[in-house]
Image (tube, rainbow, N blue to C red; front, top):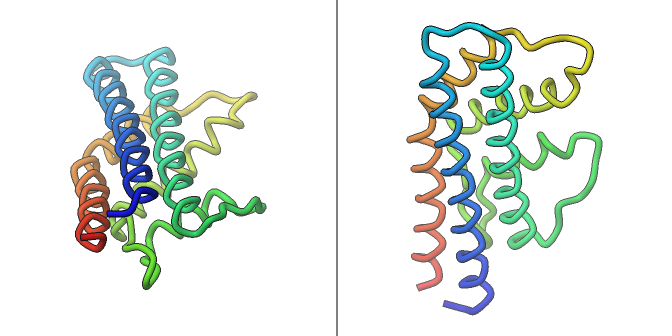
Length: 158
């Protein structure tokens, strides 16, 4: 396996650990929120949902930067980056995400935008809880996609 790929896999592994830690924090908030109501719980879950998407996006930037040598700025940067993870690039890399994972992460991406720009209005408690439930339900599949991507890279390099 060439040195550049070894370095990428080490950085990728570190970033995946960040995703897993953020999932763990969201799961903690989810457990605390069961049966409770209140803006404080909602804001905490919303914060960790936001951070989770940011951790995923950092992972996507790492992949795109290594394999495609660029992550270009554009008005639609966030959705373009996420879509890029859905497709494999022949001769370069396999897809990182399945369609199911893409759908959940796209919803999370949209929430991240709302969270960042929700200055003048509050977050809706039920919507935040519903999104957290969907994201946590999808965790196993998303992490399986990520591990499959890593394994495919190692297999191709062997």
